[in-house]
Image 1 (cartoon, helix red, strand yellow):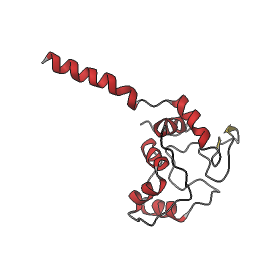
Image 2 (cartoon, rainbow, N blue to C red):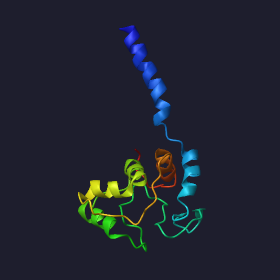
Image 3 (cartoon, helix red, strand yellow):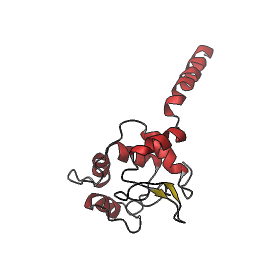
Length: 143
């Protein structure tokens, strides 16, 4: 019995770093996002200066999808918001969205034709970026 417990404990010890989220790395990876996105707090202070093509990502974790005031969302994400009126951005949803935005939309709407304005896909560091965005989301619920 002891060898099994030790084996299980060792497996968790080895696996844990693979699932750990690195906020500092997420901040670094976010540089790829700032061509389109900024992070500007409620007082107008720039956390990360960036583009205005995409919505401001300050306080995005815990915010209802497609709800950034003043931003013109595409039809696909508006459809997802209409079909899921209580859906808020979680770290898990952000990871899925930045991995493949159109796949995420299809999963939320059931519509394979639903498309997003976001064409960029991040193929590594998604969990870290989501953790970083949570760190600049003071209203985010604990996950």
